[in-house]
Image (tube, rainbow, N blue to C red; front, top):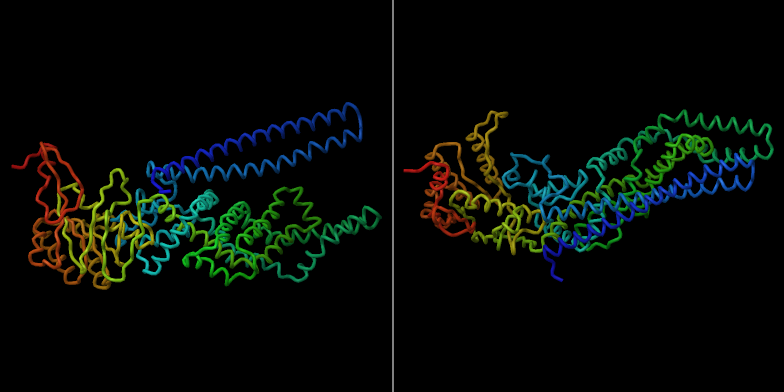
Length: 608
């Protein structure tokens, strides 16, 4: 079956409806459980009232246990249903987010604005980070590491081998796209820094907090103490007398040991308190990645480091679950009465601490790697989702020799209903392609279209094109230059700084590709022309390919003196009865039609 944008959107909408129906059913089930609990509470009151009115009866005393037992069963059932409901709501959010993204370009994940950097070689000019950018369009990450990996892959070109491996990995993950929605749902309530906190505790804090467990005497007593205490309790119930006194002494001794080590126990517990549910979700998140036999070498590499560190045969998901179980056992202390009894008889806090040190010795290093793997999958899933949602996009061919050709290149951030595609390609050698044209005709958008698709290609992603082949370039741009009051920098000085950055870069990197949009706006027209001409000549001398958008027609005349190195393109307009029409199609040669006079006339200014 051929996938289309409409069929993909319909699938998401059907999933939203299905999830909503499941959520409604779970909410109804929770309401029934709540009413049942209320009924059992009332029944217990009635039984107690009967005992008071009718006097002592073994039958009535036995009956009082039934509502209590059923009530406890319902409490457990309610907890399970609530967990199902929470997960169902998270999965609904994931599906609804895809519907919103396709229909309204609204993405509920981070837009990466904290990665924005106007001094970056191209990110500000090509709309890579921030609101309405490529990052905001692609991102499906919730962890800090996932966000960082995504930002890195959009911020610089990968090597050819890595790009090809990432293409294969993204394509393979797309085959499992349904599972990726569940992966994302498990992480939906995760705050970006939570994995970092757990990692820091495992690597730096926990080893120090667990030093008190190295005492051999304490280790021995934690093993035999519960048996002694329970044994004395049984003997006391049988023989009474001095046995009770001995039991009392042991009980006080047990609580004394707990109290003496309470500072260290609290450090351990409060370092992980409340994270058992989070770790449980991480366990489920990791498990499906372990169950699939991956073909892609890029994904297989996610597991290699962990296999070397793994001191057990248990998968990471099981080790995470083991840690979650220890923390859940620790959480019993949240019930003061139950916590007191279990510490009195079983030394629960100390037992959990020793269970933790055993777990730490064999699993901590592997878990840290496993948590990082979650972020690695998140980042790839972001691109796999893009690949799934854009069936008309294609993976580019990465060439070894100087190449750049695109068929039906479109801007990925422009909705397909308004997007105009163009073909563009370089010769077999570097050229400076001068693009002239009217205001609003599409020059800047075209430059960004070429640049942003190169960024996608170098990240291993599909591109917004029917076909694209290119070699690896270091993209450098000069488009949105502005002054800075904070840095006391004028527009012209900011432009000079940007030009210097580009000149320094092309002198170092032979594979640079430059995008220039209206150079030297901050100076007079004569110096602007001469400066632009000298800069183009430097690009020619350095054999650096470039797209150079300008309103200055004089620059197009450079083709006469540099016929092998300079090409002219343009975007034009059609004017009929003072109405402007744009087709946004790239054409050969310099522009012949401009619209500045007409635009000025529309605001009441007429050129004589």
